[in-house]
Image 1 (cartoon, one colour):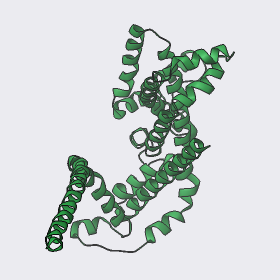
Image 2 (cartoon, one colour):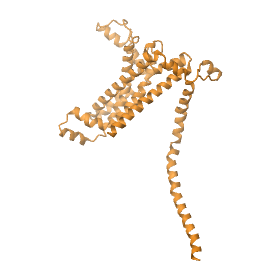
Image 3 (tube, rainbow, N blue to C red):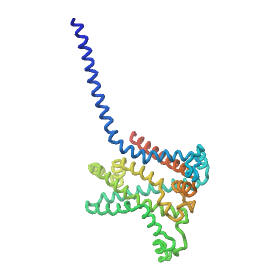
Image 4 (tube, rainbow, N blue to C red):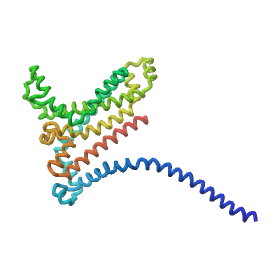
Amino acid sequence: MSAATSTPKNAANATGTLERRRVPVRRRLQRGSAPWLLLAPGLMTLAVLLLWPLVRVLNLSVQDYRLRNLIRGDSNYTGLTNYREILSDPFLWGTVLPNTVGFAVVCVVLTMVVGIVVALFLNSLGTWWRSICTTAIMVAWAVPAITGTYVFVWLFDPLNGLVASTLDQLGIMEAGSWNWFANRWAFYAIATANVVYHGFPFIAVTVLAGLGTVPKELYEAASLDGAGPLSRFRSVTIPGIRPILAVCIILSTIWDFKVFTQIYLMPGGNGTNRDVMNLGVWSYSESFAQGLYGRGSAIAVLLTLLLLVISVIYMRSLMKEDEL
């Protein structure tokens, strides 16, 4: 009799145990889904604003898509023809890619150097002067790229620009005797100054915030060990702000590789001077000036892949350094 009555009790106990086990699992699932529910609006917005355009560009890049296709609403898939034509074009390897990569590398290096130097200078100031100087340099970052580019165009105008007038008054060069924007090297020197001028404030303010997180005790210990300013910077400051520098370098690389406005708005940068084209301007020119939307989309995809490869390589190198 006792055995008969114990069986239902055992079954009830087993059922209760299962129910108790299910409750924590259900709670864990609820807790795990809560962050995703909170992120859902933002993820949906990103999907609409970023994912769908990317899919659309990939779709156009495998088509011979022109203005007639846009008007008719039909498609003309050609596979990887656009990519083969672009990668076999000597103009890509001889002009566009060197302009894009060389310009981006120089801009990233100069922007980081100027930004770090300015951040160290701001960090050495008192609170009052630091606030004034930080506000002043942020004005340069707040100025739209279009406005800033036109300022640089005016500065280097071959006839009436400030630089030409100053050199003329000093007797170095007669105004109007040389066009800065017609020469490939001079064109990109002006564009580099423009990009660095607008980019270093962000780096300076970000690095300045990182400098505030480095413990002062480390500097004091390094000073007691006889380390000079350069040694303290190399052994204490750089390791302390390395994660911030990594983010700044990646962001600067992405921004400078896809620079468009600062090139396109300068005289000759809209495609009339093919010697100064970069990937961004070439993609725009092929798409909207020539009406070759498929070819222009393929160039944009190649630019995106180039940025992804550079970012992945840099991140992997950082991870290997952290493991050592």
